[in-house]
Length: 259
Image 1 (cartoon, rainbow, N blue to C red):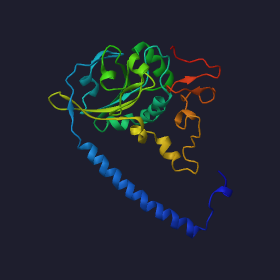
Image 2: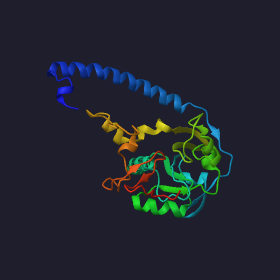
Image 3: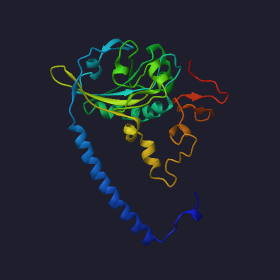
Image 4: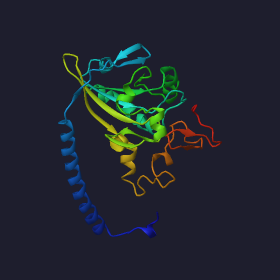
């Protein structure tokens, strides 16, 4: 992008154009507020199944993850058994959430990540990334399958499964999402909301800032999404690329996870 390819105007014209745009932005903000209110009014579903996760401090039930708070957000982090590191996009998201943890916890919200990989495979990567949020393994439960973020070999082979509230193409065995829960005074846990795909995009403050710039997200291919440029935060100078499963591959084509 150059000044030759973009309108350059006087201050008066610039202000007029930006004022007109602001009016549209304000209308969208009001629509977004209304949508969020609608989201909070959605029905809940009681979670009766006894999920037990593996944590560094032993087994934890879903209700234990609240740690005294009434609300819980779980990140369905793409990290399958046998992988040596997590999905690049999920890692990008966690870099943002890590900074928000203290604020969430002061506002009656606990955050945790859950992956299907065994804990022994998760923890070295968590340490490498320098993250401090709770990260648990659902390896011995059906949690990931019940929340439609993990898929069987047969589903991947057929290429179809239930994701983001619809039957859709399933190219890989692990996908991402966010799920929210509420725990009442009696200890009952309710599933209140889930977001998949681009539903969690507003978490990504980097995107919100890029959207204000002249070039925007500037994701020009080959995948036309964040895999074109985002890397694990310790790999930006390492070359390589991110494949269609969201995993990093080195320049020599070696996958950094076992298949």
